[in-house]
Picture 1 (spheres, rainbow, N blue to C red):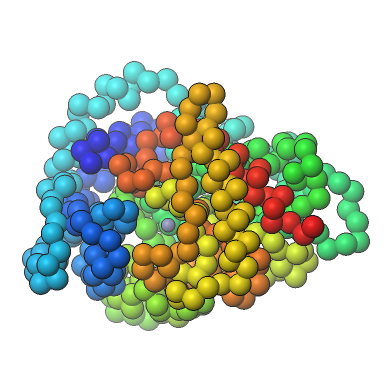
Picture 2: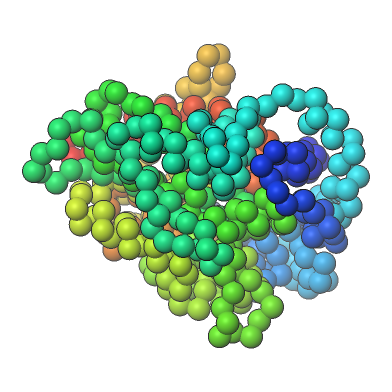
Length: 433
Ligand SMILES: [Zn+2]
């Protein structure tokens, strides 16, 4: 796990040194006194951790063989007492995140300075980067340039965030001549969780591939994609708190010190299950379903698309864990079309695992969202329940927990290659025959 936090420092510096990043980074100050703990165990431990998270005592970073979570300076005693009472063994992985980052900073600075990277500027970003995570402004520029150079691509803003950033929607039109028939469509969503930077990075690589595809894969379909669904949270994670998850909304009707809503707990399906009513929790569901500008914008546009197209696939891209989840997340019951979702999911996973040029691909597990614990208010559950989308997934990108959310940028390229191979198998399987 040590490597994880070395990488965190690398990324912090990555942000500092990025030519277009105007704000000095002070993550390590914000994270002073925060600790990373790890508790061994399966679903029983996950259930206890879920409760502690709902109470705002911890921030779960990942579940796999063990639960890895952040403990805040004021909650250590309560968390320790709760875990002991439940008989759960745990150990401290990082005793002071802030200090650890500060100590590592100087050591890695030289490495970053000596590395040569791709370039991307705020007014010129011809390709999505593979060597560094892009800023929101760079992403917006890339999307504008993609639309400008490709007649297939349309770009529009589907709404504004709390901090007045545009939520961009890319529409890639089919290459075949338009007919009168309702066309099949796929929808991709990236970056609804702020700290999952690999999500935006991979989604942008996919857009690049899809927009230039001249095969039968995209001949007859409409592709819609919101590559950065939580721009405010993303920028806050880049500039202030690397582990930020929610959006940055402040609800003036609530007297509270805490900011932000977990946008992937704010959709209406199963609302409230496995989420928190505590505004300070990382999984705060918001004051009501669709209380947030981002989820409202996504909902409106997805509903529109499903009325003009046959919306066949919704893929929400997250990290980490290397899983392809299918609904439901809010209940253990089986969702309609589960067997088909599994079949297509396995085809995705097999193709992704093949790797390329001698490199082994990532191994994705295909399973139900509610496998370990219940969680509601997610995009894929809503798409399935409300729009009756036959294939809905939440894709958890690499890795399996070593770096977690703080994935080094040299993972962008292999992760995108694997997902692209998987999507090429998946897309034909989800379309109307
Ligand atoms: Zn996520």
